[in-house]
Length: 412
Image 1: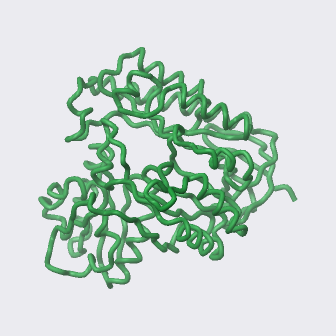
Image 2: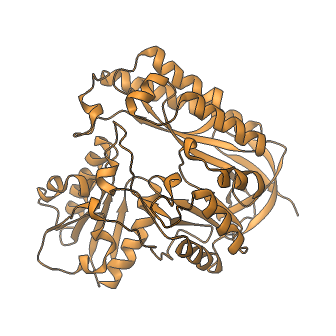
């Protein structure tokens, strides 16, 4: 049996299921595959620590390391005695990579890839939610980010393949599909006719009427196209929860990050969505302690949480990545970075608690994820008695709010 250990993003989680299928096709047995993340130095450190622990506990297992960190720094893992095989991000999705071909490191140039094929994945946790990769890679070069070197340039799955896979997943009983990608709103720029993400969303909902819910993973607000705005306004099956790749709330820091949006763009996007879908919830990726960040600049990020109405924060203490421009900028002292990340997390926790409190007394639809736990359209977790069948959508009333989740009662 092959065990998959996943670090990092939703796309990695999705690809881990594809890895499981490819490894099974190759007959790989008694192995542990680490699908790594390269977004921070801490992520790399944690993966190496986990690999060493796995070897101590499983002295005879074959250990395979792949993912973004394996792609960007294969030598790091090749130097570890515990590792038997290092695979790149392209190689990990090919069955032949898991046969013993005598090469200990199989990592090719990710920038040579020009296409991204649909990965047919059936094994997700429960029957509530499935992830569907529609895009990979990134054409932008933010000063802090190593990910393009792990994922390559932006590549999109053809629209017909996405619709076909979504239909297949819906027919297999998945009530919700989450579209994933490295730069999701860049979808289609490399395809004939340059279809947009919004066009994909509208066609998918039109041609897969049996799909009950469609959700987007992280998006760049500045890249929302007219079709996406129409989908947000008109398509009730498009869930009103939007996670933004905001990164900061200070204009100068955003420029030093080489981001394409401004503070005002983030606030404006949230305000427009709320006019179209008043129930909408917003999350954001935010970096604390970016190089040159002053206390006043950090305060601008703190106040962005209130001004944009953010309630689901992914906070990253800045971690310099070798080879990126930000690693060469004047660094904020580590204790300050850590403290700012703490304060930002506390701000996010307070914002989430306040939002959940405002939902008490409302009726909503819950998608049951596991026994007694469901999720609202705006992504809030709710506990409800009698909800036992994953994938079931039931009507419920929110009766109580805690710090991070709701309590609901089913409406008979």
